[in-house]
Length: 144
Image 1 (spheres, rainbow, N blue to C red):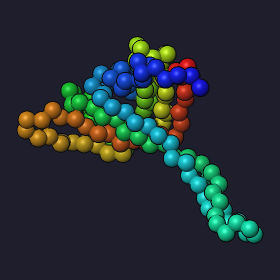
Image 2 (tube, rainbow, N blue to C red; image 1 turned 135 degrees about the vertical axis):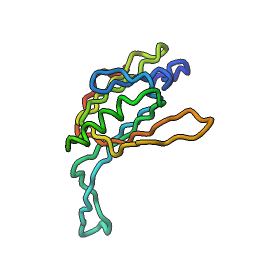
Image 3 (cartoon, helix red, strand yellow; image 1 turned 120 degrees about the vertical axis):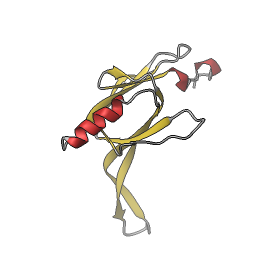
Image 4 (cartoon, rainbow, N blue to C red; image 1 turned 135 degrees about the horizontal axis):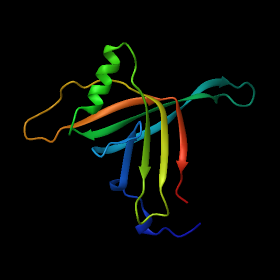
């Protein structure tokens, strides 16, 4: 195993987000993960427990945005009022200049779980958490 070089640790400060090809510079965080769906498999004989069989997966995540405009709200409301779901592609990019390259991942068929119409407090920068699900993804670039 190679020796860990501290300066190669990737900082989220260099993360970027695109939604349907449009850069969202107001994004301050993104998490996307896959939950493995498993089913119990009874095992008879010497083993007195249950095994697990992978039966699929579910993609979910959230994006954190500093409120600077209403562009995502507008897209969500327009889709809702027309009786459709807003379905987008989100591309996450991590490109710390000290790292060994960049990582880009496309999340496909993303649908947001809610629409936040208003959420604010005095003396506080407004941020929004936008939970979502997705059903496909592509690893575009990986860090070596």
